[in-house]
Length: 99
Image (tube, rainbow, N blue to C red):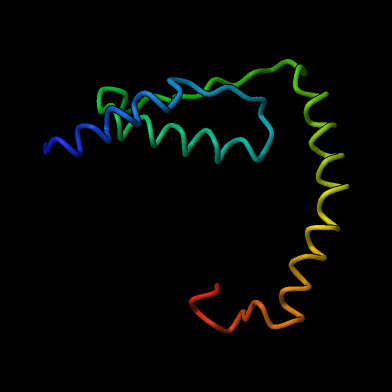
């Protein structure tokens, strides 16, 4: 393996958590699978293992409520900004470069 690839591999090894943890919410399965794939790619000895821990307690209820409120308050204004770009021609969805 060339030196550059070794350096990048080391950088990713340092920046990627060993294990992620979450509740069994439907959206977390993608996170668990993506993280496990990254860990398997970085360390082949982990093949066949799940690099994610599922929690059964409800300790994430407060963060979930906060996230829901943030989305509810943030989304309308953000959609307005995106619509402005579309309506004024700043963004062309038919242009492959802008997709």
